[in-house]
Length: 316
Ligand code: APR
Figure 1: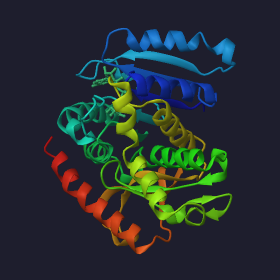
Figure 2 (figure 1 turned 45 degrees about the vertical axis):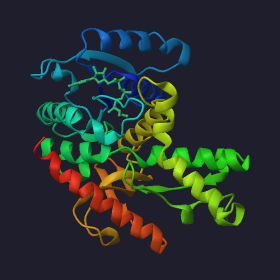
Figure 3 (figure 1 turned 30 degrees about the vertical axis):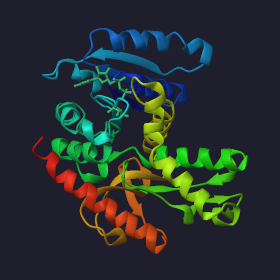
Figure 4 (figure 1 turned 120 degrees about the vertical axis):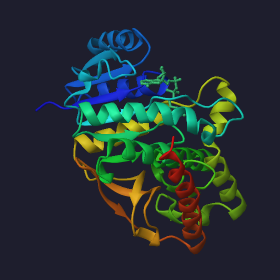
């Protein structure tokens, strides 16, 4: 049967994600929803008109939904739902400042997903993503493997881009990794970074690597400060679309994502940025790899930081 993906939220992140998913030309239908009257339908029409130029057959369907679930029939049968609904940051804000307002939105969206697309895999991108992912799982009551969040693919791409620019090498020469939270306790993992197979530590002094680590951790804020209105969406949508593709293609790709961790790295019962194998059922398994003592300590610190906040979302 033809594949169907829904993107909830037709703002910058959602609309670019829908466009990327459609341009893959692997879905029958991309549904794009928003609460703003006409916006998703207008964007869908515009994207459909690009089909003859870009040469893809996927149809984009734009639907306005109501807070009581009006319009959600359109998402029925979705294999994957990407949740982008929610406010973005303004300069000076941390992702955590969005917690309460986005929790209300994500809870309502998740309840409707559970009702209308009970078999879907859910990919959450709304911020703060570690908490919104935990909330989406709570509100859908889906198995934990079927709900995960986007952060690590983006943070890794930012780290990779900075390394490639610093060393003036193609991005494809660089392998990098970030784990942990999508925030202050992000854990870029220099020990897993290589350039044409050579360890990053052989190519750059420790202070320079630390500078790149810090820049990666602040990668989102750097874009927000320049844009002044809204947050990043080109790299974020590329990341979310890749993850949805790995699900529908049942690819088994290992990607850094916000996944339910229960035992790996000695960490229990928390949504956290780790590497995981992605397939039709969502997370096939969390993949553990070697970390230095400092990196492992950073990951554990991230786990405790997000655990405290994830406990709060139950009441939001
Ligand atoms: N259902 C569907 N869409 C909603 C809902 C809802 N209940 N509530 C809000 N939206 C929509 C808004 O109408 C808006 O069109 O979500 C969209 C958000 O779009 P933008 O303001 O452009 O924000 P964007 O840059 O897309 O970021 C979305 O992703 O990276 C995160 O921090 C970011 O949480 C933010 C989210």
